[in-house]
Length: 382
Image (cartoon, rainbow, N blue to C red; front, side, top):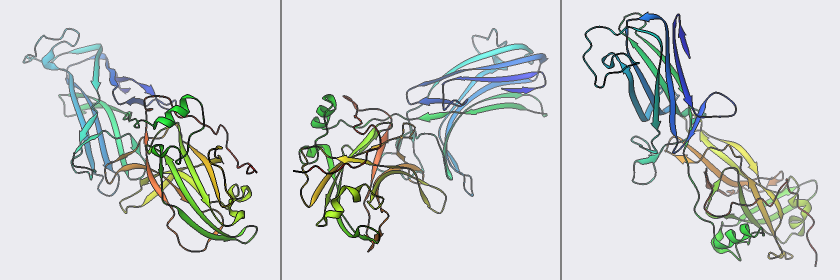
């Protein structure tokens, strides 16, 4: 709402709220609807037009304050060639004198947000410049913003226009590809997931990570090989889980014992988000979520030198979906993090990018097997 003396401009947008605030929110495929209201307690002869604008911008809040539009929608709701707003002309006419307005007026509007834009000037992957509209982003120097505005123009040198603008949140929709047949069957039957040995199509197994270090207080020297597998496809719906399998190999029984694996010295596997902070290409990591672990099912029998764990990373429901436009992006990673013990030599700890999407794949939804934070129980014997 904008009020100036006896003039009042009102912009009403119909949309779901976000986190209880007044900012409207829209997802891909939804239509923006609303109304512009004008209240004049006194006759006004200088108004010439009422214009609506809806636009998206991708920008850099750094030194040059650069900004590029993703889309721009301009619509004239009224101008003096339309005549009386309460009884508009069938066709615009050339006005012979100013239109005198007084009282209350309103104009409804409707606009379908485009799904894509031409990413000219962005370092996109692939050959096509046609990209999905990115989600709203307002962290670091980069930003993606969407706004709805209305402007009242006046034929006067003093205050030639009134303007009112509100932001809105936009989220594109995406979904993962289908799971493997055995994974779908496990979800339907509420059964444990088969590991990579029984369901090779359902997992991506990464090269082993060799960890050598020591803990002066309890465990001493540790030599451990960790082989991580992530459920495929490497695309996960926000609010669901990332299933993991972790194979541990060592000649040291202490390194395979439940006390070490559940201790702070055990290397952590975490999920985190990366974003670019400024023009110096500084990346930051945020929203760290650690995996929880339990002993894998009976189909993965432990041996004296090997243990198999099943893990889950619980994804927050409010995550923004992944996108990458070169200098501006939201990326998510899964990787190892050192435990509390000292690393004896420099190693390149594993990390891989995963995609976060908004919708579920066709078929059953992923199950959460870890209802609460899971600690490692004692290993079965026999």
